[in-house]
Length: 447
Ligand code: ADP
Ligand code: MG
Image (cartoon, rainbow, N blue to C red; front, side, top):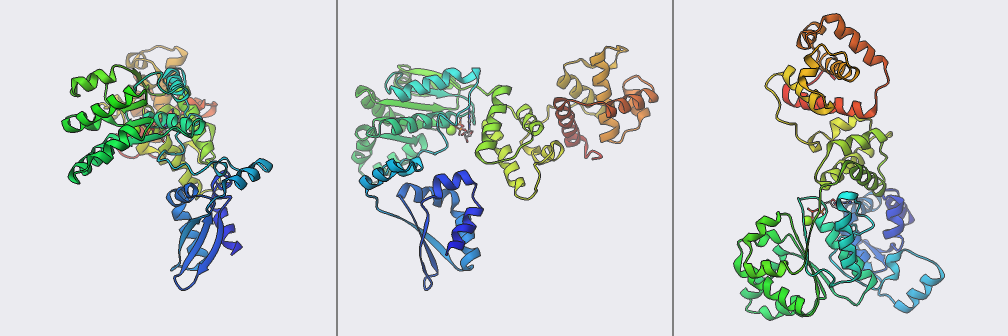
């Protein structure tokens, strides 16, 4: 019996275990039904474990009890008073102290987990203000491209309100779910229940991905009336959209005028320094051992969507399970190929593409590279180009010399010099990036 808990524990990061699994117990085993019965302290934890760790739990069950066994999780009915007493004596994970708050918010989408730099300080602070004083900016309208954290910030508002004001009813929904529910309500000839839910039983309404309602007139009308009632009662509304403000023209005028009563805030793509912080935060959260140069490589090469930054860390996490030491830069660049920003549209031949990539990555001009200039930085970039062509792609020093209007020995010398010097991580990651772009376009490189 204990073995099961031990095996499961070995598969779960320690922090996660402490937070979510600390109340897990093996209740009994029903050999007839071939079912392992587990028990946790509340419904919230039960649902969370099933959703997030169901597969790992099932695996451990199979490993210990056999292939045919399945599992179920039950929860203890809580006696809140004794729970609180106990938790006062002995600090336990936060979740246990809370009463049964069931929300459909993603637990990771909190203010603490949202990383921002100068580019999003405003958005962050406005969201925080709304969370602390609902009604201040009403409605709050968050816009920004896909994957930049709109849903995250919106749900952070929800979490914060639930935590600080448990009596306030927060409802998160997507506009698609809103639409489907409405259609169903009408089909069943019972819109009253729907209206009751959205207009009476909610204090804070979070509506995600409003762009889904463009062109859906009937649903916009319902949303208009919903918003009207809620705003009249000073209830906070937060709306997200991944379309630029100009596209909002496609909504009904009266709805637009409701949106305009509040505050529009744009979420911007994270800058490089923020991207580094985000990658660090993700790797800490998911227990990924990441080398500094790999972290920089990811932050430098994945711009825009934070979702892709997360994807990169998740890939490293998966890889970590198979290898003992953290991946190096070269392995990382292979592993993350598809996630790295797509190559710029390259020139039709190898030489011109190489020149173009060198120029754009190192801030020099192609003319400089082909000139007789001996300026240190220009010669250095030239050497890098020669190195890439010869060492990565197997062109001869003679050929490469011709490309750069130089002789064969200059190329050999340059490469040797580069090999003997210590090259900065930033430069190496750019070299790898250029190599990947070229091999994506012109076939595989030598290594
Ligand atoms: P959007 O709704 O704008 O498409 P999401 O809120 O779904 O984007 O964000 C995508 C993923 O990236 C989520 O896992 C989210 O937690 C994460 N994320 C986005 N922005 C940030 C940020 N600034 N800091 C930390 N994580 C972020
Ligand atoms: Mg979203």
